[in-house]
Picture 1: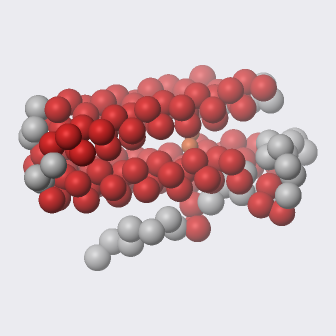
Picture 2 (picture 1 turned 135 degrees about the vertical axis):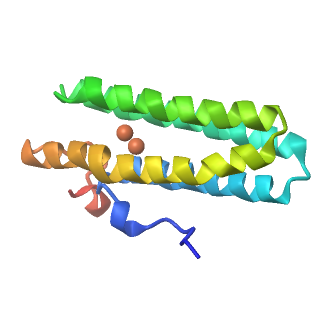
Length: 146
Ligand SMILES: [Fe+2]
Ligand SMILES: [Fe+2]
């Protein structure tokens, strides 16, 4: 069975970003569980709404950080965030239409997209910060070291 827990291997080393990724993965897993049970429509609606809202906030937070440091790949990164949000919105439409099986079928694809994004594009930002001596973590603690 595929591991459900957060995989430390996809940590970017920026503690605020990693904390948000953990919550994002937790919400994806919670939604999958609710859809598998398939009985609580209101809970499914609330969980998918939380995933949409939190993903929007997380992507804005990353993009603001990238703008702050004049990250040259910001536009490409934001474009990819838009694609991920489209996919989450599609899952929400399926949940709201009560086609839970269809929504479930897309959860795995979403998880792969999200983890691939973290491993490649989010990691790319973290490496760029390290190369330029930038430490985005406000507290600069050990978790903040890249
Ligand atoms: Fe991210
Ligand atoms: Fe990102």
